[in-house]
Amino acid sequence: MPRHLLTCAFFLLAAPAAAQQAIDSAYTATIRELTPKDSVWKFSTEFVDYLPASSTVPTPLAVLGYVPGTIGRLSHVADINRYFKAVADASPRAQLFSLGLSDEGREMILLAIADEETIGRLDEYRGMLARLADPRRLDAAERARLLQAAKPIYWLTGSIHSPETGSPEMLMELAYRLAVDESPYAREIRGGVITLITPVLEVDGRDRVVDVYRQTKALKLPRGAVPLAYWGKYTAHDNNRDGMVLSQKLTQHYIRGFLHWKPVVGHDLHESVPFLYASTGTGPYNDEFDPIVVDEWHKLAYEEINELTRRGLPGVWTHGFYDGWAPNYVLAIANLHNGIGRFYETYTSSGADCHTVNRWDEISFDHSSFFQLKGPHAKSCANCHTTPSDFTAFTCFTCHEHDKAKGGPHRGGRCRCADGDASPALLRHRIAVEGGGGVDRSSRDVDQDCADASAKCRSAQCGK
Image 1: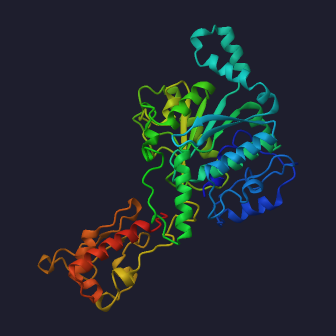
Image 2 (image 1 turned 60 degrees about the horizontal axis):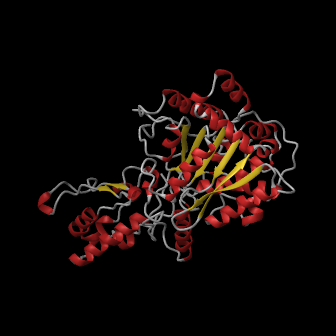
Image 3 (image 1 turned 90 degrees about the vertical axis):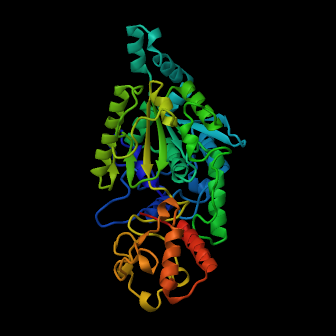
């Protein structure tokens, strides 16, 4: 799970000092057990390698029975919302709001966290940002006064893409930390920033993903065996392309929330690439995005890269992902309304399972069933899979010459598991020409083998 990389990135506003607060020892032990170990690289920092204790505010472990990031554990929206309500009920530093109901009647929520003084004057601070959002109505003196008195609002949103399951889990722990941590850097965040957290944007899809994940595990099926056709009621990935048309309830609720709170930063949490990408885009940038905003993307990203890299975390990067043009993403709502819309990308959390960067985990392709290594094909892996770092690639040229008279080129190819596409035609060619490892096949048998092999490939876990 990407919990530690994401959580520590939000604690970079001030340097930490020695904590005087009691530590939740059981929770901390689980954090350290779940965090990967490496002789060179680190996967956590001094910001989040422990959990401060509270006698009043419950931890996710106390409410839900597990520590976010635990292998095999994901929560439904109702349980996530229940945890955020428990934090708001127990802490004077938090206040819970409803953004509205989804297309299927699930509630989208927003938790505001700041120090007690700020929470007590939340409407007043929100009003200051509303006035600053339209400076045409302010004279210079009033604008200067508001700039000194107002506090920026930073809005974090999780899981608009339902299969990206990590951010709602992480955000539960982040909410707890922001509410209870008494270290100087946490107090500085609470005193200087109003943090808004919406743990799940696509609440309908989140519940579907959790249901599918649990069903797959219960039936002992390989990952991907139970398909997820839609995330929300009407859309899948393109729910994050609705920032202009506003056809989905989640987008309508988001823009109403944005216009109500006027956050300075809208920060969307995604999971698709290693290790932690902080958005800047590559260009061409949309002409409607103010150059000051593009500059601010870079300032924020470089600060995070520098701070996390100097602490020994690998692969914190920017630039080579996303162009910065599309005006219909949810984050574009901020960029087109005098705010900063940005996002993180990290690993997809694969439901709640483990994966690594250098191998397939729980690969399910079975040579004994689909390309038997018998007779002349009783070779070592390296004979056909000549790229040691990528066993999806293979070649027949090691042993076979290109001879169309024998049924076509033995050209090899790639099992394109990453995008869910095996090559039945190629598998059919190989089994028909080469006898399936010395086993004669009828045309129907070959077609069934190809279909089975394609399904196996689609269900393999590609943790590259």
